Length: 68
Length: 251
Ligand SMILES: Cc1ncc(C[n+]2csc(CCOP(=O)(O)OP(=O)(O)O)c2C)c(N)n1
Ligand code: SF4
Image (cartoon, rainbow over all chains, first blue to last red; front, side, top):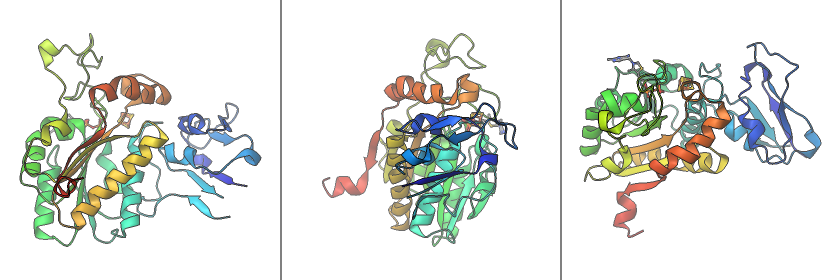
């Protein structure tokens, strides 16, 4: 069991986390807009997360916390 | 559950102004992680450049000072010589370090100043809107090379690590990249070593980080990281170019 938390309002929707996730669990939520005006990254299936922190490693804005 | 990844304490809790997907943010974090892990937040003094990272003084929680364009290694020299007990680093782009500031870079390395230089090579002038840099690749289209960099007219891009490693002076010269997880982790190790060497009084350390500028390259962040792999790294090979201590120990 692992948990990934995004500080969504600081996300710029660059998508580098989406490409980094080896399980393909992240997505840019095209139907959402955050306080900065970007469509943010979201977790689509927390159950499958392995807590590798690849997403957080590539996040340029350091908005991801990973727990395991 | 235990936290396996969180924002380092030495990275200030403020939004970064960088463009979406700009690796400056990743590189800031790696520097902050190194400062945290070495426990030097109270002793570190950073020198910010002119370039997109000009506001780095707002992003690190240690003491920071802003240098005139390209002069960071000279400022760092002054600080380190006056306050040898502090850990002094510069954070500079390629326009800053390899163009207007090349003299300061070369001479600080030649003197083996006991400082740490983080050199972000994104092959372009980001802040001013995408002009050709000394590190722009042959054929690279920029605002000032709209038909691609013509080496017969503009000369060849400068490989800073290779050039500096010909000097007797410097202790540690290495090139890393941040285009994927594996390279980011290797970059982290190199940056930490560059600080550790300074703490041990070994001399001049430069870590060139091959970065990207999605905005001025006219690419998506992911395309930019792919271009790093396909075009930048063949011209700027990763590796350790000089490590005096390792050479002495026959490693
Ligand atoms: C003395 C002086 N000359 C020129 C400039 C204009 N200028 C600002 S940033 C910059 C280059 C920035 O490029 P780089 O160092 O590669 O950093 P990046 O923005 O790509 O991170 C230039 C030429 C200046 N601010 N001061
Ligand atoms: S202009 Fe380029 S280097 Fe500057 S913040 Fe944007 S992507 Fe980064």
